[in-house]
Image (cartoon, rainbow, N blue to C red):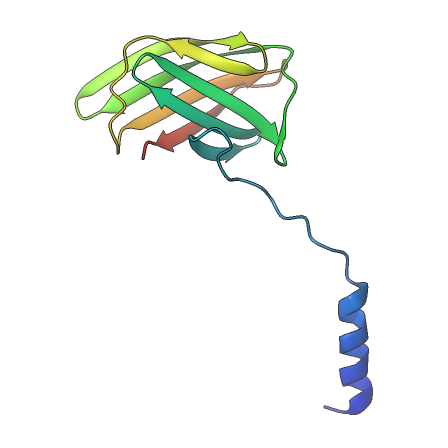
Length: 122
């Protein structure tokens, strides 16, 4: 490679725009799934399922939110409706939340079409 081409490549590296790093790490100790509606973080407890919603790492302001969660643990299947509580969705019930359990969340946020998210509990 000639020196001019090497210099041009080196100079162009400094002119490239910085790529935004997506933050998909759990902020509440749950499991995060990326969807078209935003990042959904499921925090699963035996009596409560909580879904936090964020957009590019920042909490999303929710004006409306509905849906349901379905917990699959072996042959057991439990469903519960999600309701908006502040800026998160909650479902109350009796859930088997062992590691490896699967959770399907169907949510509609801020008047937009519903999305589905599949979580595997750790």
